[in-house]
Every structure is written in C-alpha cells, then in structure tokens.
Length: 171
Image (cartoon, rainbow, N blue to C red; front, side, top):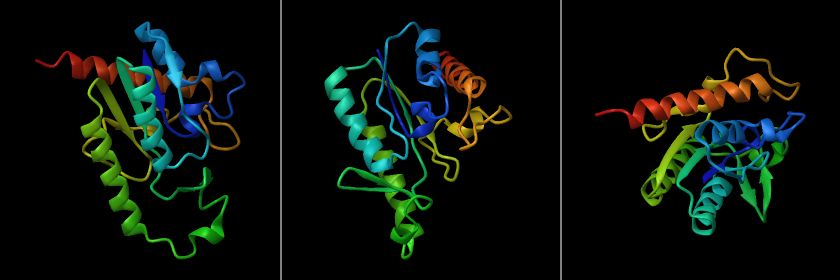
C-alpha cells in the first residue's frame, strides 16, 4: 500500500477528478492501493503528524511525503498561509520557519522505517529530499490557482516512479 501526504498539489486541487492526482497515478504504476491523506493548504506540522498517524494506522509498504513551504502553520486544526491570512504573518520569522522545516524533515526521515521518499517544496531544498515536487511538473498546464492539471500530475507520478527506479536499482 502507498501512503501519500502533502498539500493541495498532492490532494489534487483543480483536477476535475481527484483520482487523477499523482498519488493514484503512481499507485497504478506500482500496482499498489493508495491512501492519500493530503489536504489543501496543509502545513508541515499537519504533514508530519498525519504521516506518523497514517503509518501507524495503515502500515504501508511505501510512503511518499510532499512537504510544503515552511511559511505555513496550523492552529486549532486550521491551516494558515500568507495569502489566506496575511495578518498572522506580520511578524513571521523566516529563519525560525526554515530551521523548523529542516528539523521536521530530519525527524520524519528517521521515523519512517519502510521504503519512503520525501519531496521538498518549491522554496527550500533539503538533502533528505529526492526532488522538488514542482520541478516534476514544470512546463505543464496549471489551473487558475497554479496547481498542476492532469498532465502535470502524470509527470509527477512518472518522475517519482523514475527516481524510485533509479534509487532502487543502484548497486
């Protein structure tokens, strides 16, 4: 079973059929059932917590986590973004947010025991991550909100599949 967690790009926002989102396309390529726990606007706090609880609940054979920008947070179950909640970000500390992101990535990397791949957001690179999610769908049409459409999701699934194949086949 494939467990995926992330934000709107992983959820399939702006697709007319969410079953066309990259997690389901990747699951088809790998012949795995998919549990996609992504949520639009999700913070890395949500992604970290949901990945851990998803692993405990579903015991997947493969986990793919698509981190989002460090410039989001969660309070009382609500997702806050600079676009949606600009007042909350007036005194935002970028250095703290970046340090927190790297800590979250390292914690999750050390926690997951099954095969797993981490994808970094568009605005941060991490040595623990195999690729930036947005790089995998670069050059494909996007919806009005900037999310990949069907071809972009197919490109993401193919990109992850190809990266996995390359990593797994290394001597």
